[in-house]
Length: 388
Image (tube, rainbow, N blue to C red):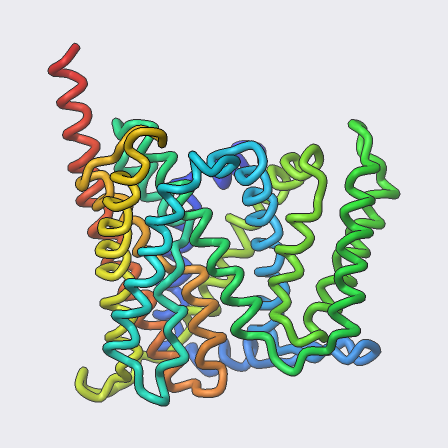
């Protein structure tokens, strides 16, 4: 059991698991199994007492995925307070590069799919899947200097922050301020409870935190804000001392079950039986904006950032290093799939094609990044060998 949990805490295996789950979802959606699985994902599970009624698919994307965002937020909190983003000097270069990795994909998307029916999909190609990107880096990046790894980690974390802001701001609807206020009160209580935990964890405090956390999730859902934001708020509010052990305990479950289940459900779309010319502009825009937009944006803005911070910042990265980071940044996957579901929630036809665009664009980015990162790592190994 411990060996399997350790495997799920590695960077490589969860990325492979996600890819398999998404591929399986896409495959089964286009076989005679579609009807049975679609009926399960569309079945509704309700909690009538509190007015919550969600399909299984929404329980996955709004409920299970909130746990993923909970551990992401705990990692964000650590990086902002003790890690790679805890000072302006450390954060400025990846922040500028991350801005380019958002602005350029948006511009490409709007140029290609800025029409009335598809313009709302512009946030989709802005995300980077940190688990996937670090998985590819772990597989192909042996020999890369620490500066490249630190830069990519900071870049992916900043991308997560941007994605969270988009979800919170762009996809809130019919806000109920009372529920939102009560949720914020619950978050404060959760944070206070987390600070009462001794080194030997109090079962009563932990039980109270779980109950408060579930209540906060329900209140955020009912408030009109996307329910995954509850996970973000709780993760940021949690005291740092218990946060890291909690993240360590949840990580195998998130990597081994929650994210693969989400990937399967999100990728469960029927490939449209149409010619390429009949596909939605959203499909082509995402396929181009994810890999190409990220590479161009991160390279261009990253080059500017390196010039700005050359004297006082971290070690300067070369254009080739920035190319590797940009290729890895194009792996949108998890957050991009969620954004595709949210952006086109009212148009299932465009939504399914947008999801296909995310899968194709991310797969292109995986292949490109594998080639670029492995060649760059080999160059660094040769250079180190020649100088020794």
